[in-house]
Image 1 (cartoon, rainbow, N blue to C red):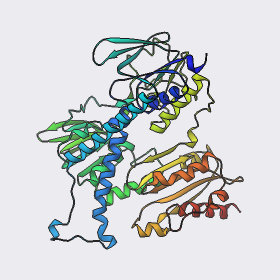
Image 2 (image 1 turned 120 degrees about the vertical axis):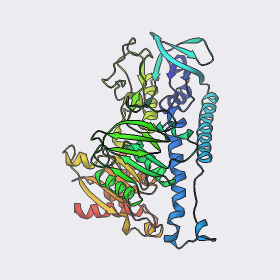
Image 3 (image 1 turned 60 degrees about the horizontal axis):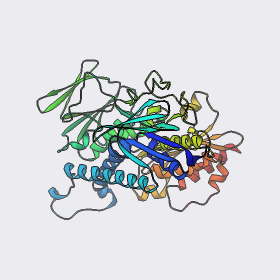
Image 4 (image 1 turned 90 degrees about the horizontal axis):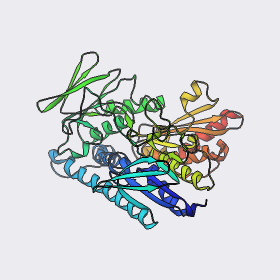
Length: 467
C-alpha cells in the first residue's frame, strides 16, 4: 500500500506528534492529529517554550547587574539605579508567546491538509482510534498506522499536593501575580536548576533542595560544579544531600520538611521531582502495547511498539526527554510506516542543553562513559578565561571539553559551559555526527575573536596530545 492510500492517526500534538504529522502529510497520507490541550503540547504551552522565555527575561535583567563591570553606569540617584521584573507582565508575555507558537503550528498543519481534532484520543480497537471531543460527543477514525505522543505530566508527592498558589508544579508558575519573596525549589535536575536560576535572576531569594551530592547529578561533573559555584556566588542557598519529605501551607508561606527533620520556610515552593508518562486509559494495554515498570511505552530504534501498526514518540517512551528527540522519533516512525528512507535513532548525535547561566551543552560520549570504561577516549579541557571574546564580554565561568578516540583522533563527544552554549555546541555536534577528526575541526577557520575559537584551540591541543 502506498503512502497516498494510508491513513495515519496521531494521539498527542506535542513535538513527537505535530512534527511527524507534517512529514506524513508531505508523504501523501491521510492524517488526523488528536490533541486535547493545544497543538505544540506541553513543550510549547507549559514547559520548554515558557520556561526558556522566563529564563531569557531573567538573563536580560542580569545584564543590568553586571553593567558596572563593563564601565557602564546609569543616570539618576543611587536609589533609582536598578531594574525589576513585573511578574504579571512577564507571565502575560510568556503565555501569549506560547499561544502564538501553538497557533502558528496549527496553521502550518492545516495548510498541508492535517485534520486537527480537539479531544482525547484512545485506541479503541484494531486499526481504530476514538476521540472524546472537547465540545462533546465522540468520533472514531480508522488508521493503518497509529502514533502515540502523549508526553508526561509533573510528578506530584502525596505529601506535597500542589495548590497552584503557594505549592506549585513547574506548569503552574505562570499564574503567579507576584514574584515569590523566597522560593524553595525542590529538585536539582534540569528543570529545578533552570527555574531556580530564573527566579534568582528575577530578584527572588531562592533555596534549592538537592537530594544528591551536587546539583545536576546526571550531567558532566565539571560542568555541574561550575553551575553550583555560580549559584552560590550569586546568593542562592543550595542544600545538598537534602531530600524533601513534605510541604504544607503555613499562613502566607510554606514549610518544606526534609527527611532529616529540618524545616525550610519560604513564601512559595516549586516541586520539580520528575514526571510520569501519560499512558493510562488510552487503550495501550488492550492493544498489546508493552509498557515498562515506570509506565513508559517500550519502543525500538524506529519507534515501533510491540503492537503491529502502533508507534510511539517523545517523553511517553522514556528514551530521552528532549523535544528534538521526540520530533526525530516521530519522523523516523512515519518514514518507517510509510516506506520512506529511514535510519534508526542515534542518540550519540543528540545535542542537549541546560539553560542555566552559563548554559551547559553536551553531545556524544561523556566523562562518565570514559571513567566507567564504556569508551576509550582522550580528554582535553580548555577554560574560557583565556578566550579574548570572553574577556570582552566579562565572561568568567565556563570551559570547552572534547572527547577524542585514540588512534583515529575522531571527535566522539564534547561539553561546552558558556553563555549560549546551545549555539556553540553545534560545530562539535557536526564533528561527532560526521566522525570528523580533531585536525579537521581545528583546520576549519574560526572568526577572531570569537567564542568558537576555543573549540578550534581545544582541537589543536588534542592534536598535540595525539602526536
